[in-house]
Length: 613
Image 1 (spheres, one colour):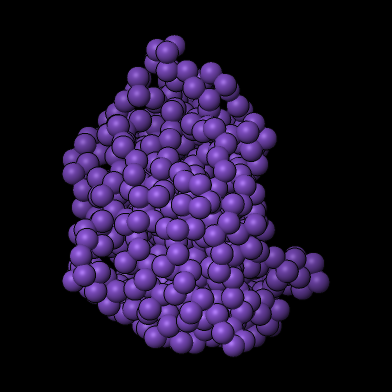
Image 2 (cartoon, one colour):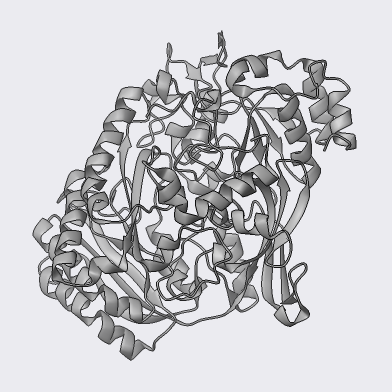
C-alpha cells in the first residue's frame, strides 16, 4: 500500500505520517482526530473523489445546541424542514438505512458510558421534550466523518489515512448492528450503502476453480439489501438464501457473521452459499477469495466476522425457484398458560418439522400481555398434504385453545407459491419497528434439547422464563408485527442448517450444524440512552437468558449476541478461532479493521470508550 499513488498523495501532505503507525491505545482517538489538519482532510477528500463528508447525528436539525465531542455550540434548529423529515422517518427501516448516521438501535449512536445522545422519542418522534432547549445534541458514538465508498481505492485511501494518523475506522452499510460495531466516537466511517450493483450468471466459475464447477450465481455489491436481492433473484426464476428484514445488507456483516435464513434448514447458512468474495484487506490489497484461491481469506470472511478486510462484493449461489408450503399462525392473547402449551407443542413437534424441511420464525408473545404471537414456518421439501400432517399437532392445539371467542386468529398451512411471494405475503407484514434502543442476547439451541421428555421440559422452562421476564416496550398492541422487538422481545428463529451438509470450508461455529434453533431475546429502553437505563435493560436481558445458557452449549450467533458476550471466542467460533487469529495476522497485521468482540478485538482501544457494560 505504501507504494500506491493514493498513499503517496495522502502522505505528501501529512507531516505526521511516518513509517511507524500510530498506536490508538496510547495516543487516544480523540487526540488523533483533533490532530488531523485541514490540509490532511483535504488530501483524503481528493483521494476519494470528493466523497468525504462531516457527519452529525441524524436528529441534529431538531436541536438548538450541538456538542461535537469537545465543545457545545448554539445552532438554529430546522423544525419545519430537516427536523420534520427526521421525525417522519425516524422508525422507518428504509429511511434509517439510507442515512449514514442512521442506526436502527439508537443506543449505538449514543455514548452510553457518558449518557450523551441525540435521539428522538421513538414512540412519538414529534415529542418536543426530547430536543427543546436546553437539550443538547451530542455527537455520541456517531463517527465524525464518513466516506461514501464507491470503489476499492476509497477503502485503500481510508486505510492509509487511518494507519498514519491514528483515526480509527468503522464500516457501515445499513445500520443493522445489534452490537455497536458500525459506530465509534471520533472515527472515520466507510459507508458502503451505495455499492448496489447486481449481476446474474447462468454459468459462474469462481476464480481459480475448474470449469466443471460452473453454476448459477448472483454477484452483489456491499450495499445490496435483502429485498433488492430477492426481487433480482426472482426475476431470474431463482432463489437465494437470506434473512427476514428487507433492509439488512446481505454482503457485509450478515454474510461474514454466517448469516441465517428460514431456508437454512435445507440450503445452508449465508456463508455456505458464497462462491466468491472481493475485499480490500487491512494491508490495502484487493483480493478475490474463493474455494480455489486466497482460501485463508475465504475461510475467515465466511463466519469469522469482518476483522480482516472490507467486503466490496460477493457472489452467491442462485438456487432454482421453489414452491413453499407455509404454516402461518397468528393469535392475540394474554393467556400465559395457553402460550406455554403452544411452546410445549412446538418443542414436542420440532423433530418432525425439522425432518420435513421447515424453517422460519416463532414468536411466543411476552409477559402475558395482549400481544400478537404465532409463527411463520415454511418448507420447500414436502407437498401440502405432508406439510399439513406434520403441522397438525400445532394447528390443532391453536384451534382448540385460541379458536373460540373473540380472539383474532390465523391458523393455516397452505401453498404460498415462490419464496418472494411467501416473503411478501407473510414476513414483510410482520416486520419490526426500528428506532428502538435495545440490548440483545442469544443462544443456539442444540438438537439434543428436543431428544426426550426431560430435555424438552428443561427447554420449555427456559423459554417461558424469557417470555415472563422480558417486558414489551409497547405492551398490549396487537397490531404490531410478529417480529417486532418492541412488542415481542423473545423470538425463536428456526434458521439453523439442521439438514444441510457443510463442506467445512467456512469458519462458522460448528455448533450451527448441530442446532435446531437460534433464540434471540432483548430488552428495550428509553431513547434518552442513559447509562442507567442501558444497565437496567442489560440486566433484565441477562436474567431472561440465564436459564437457557445453563442448559445449552457455549454457542451464539455473533450478529445477534450479547453486546458483552461471555467467552465470546468460543461462543462465536468454537474450534475455528485459532485459525481465524492466523488469518487476522496475515491480512490485517496492524489491526486497522477491528470491532467490538471481533477477532483481534483490543478492549483498551478508545474507540470502545462509549460501551457501558
